[in-house]
Image 1 (cartoon, rainbow, N blue to C red):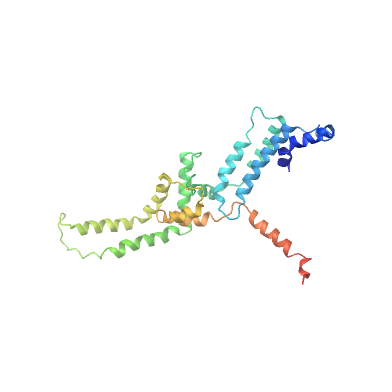
Image 2 (cartoon, rainbow, N blue to C red; image 1 turned 30 degrees about the vertical axis):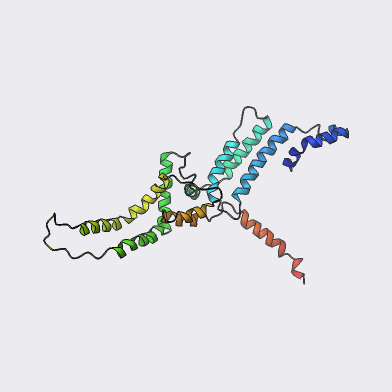
Length: 263
């Protein structure tokens, strides 16, 4: 409502001046204050709409939007006194009411554009990487993918022949060397899975505006098997309960006492 008044303020002012009713309605309205309040509320409205979207993942948007709202509420020298007070109240509300967990950190890390976590220290980045590994183990994603990775070498490589009991140190064929390397790679499969997080963090990746984050992870699942499974599981969590509340509200309007007697 404030935004519509702000947009039409000059037109309303001109009409009231023609009718000589300006002092009655607009004399006590500060247009600059109205404009500032409208701008702040419109910014929060946009954040709310994106964080409560129904058709797209929203969890990875929480940290960037909270950070953006805090920056937006920083007091400027040329702000009106009332706006300074208003921003202080909003900033206090954000700090008190926002509940952030490692799920938000990991989901932000799983979005290709924000995976570098530029605003975090190196220690904080390492902590998020460790938390991601713990979550992979908790969800048994590592174990499932280790079995998948072992299928290739086991099928393609023939069973090693029994080595003679007495073999000279320099008596190794090419097949023996390659086989030993393949078996060693299988033994270190858990280290390979852990390296996947580092490879993802260091890679230069892009995502188009037309592509959803779930579509992106489906496309890159060949390169990042374990992380793609985690991304599909974690990014399905909504950032807020607005969607479920809207569904219950709509259902409440349909299944009400007056409608139950319709024939």
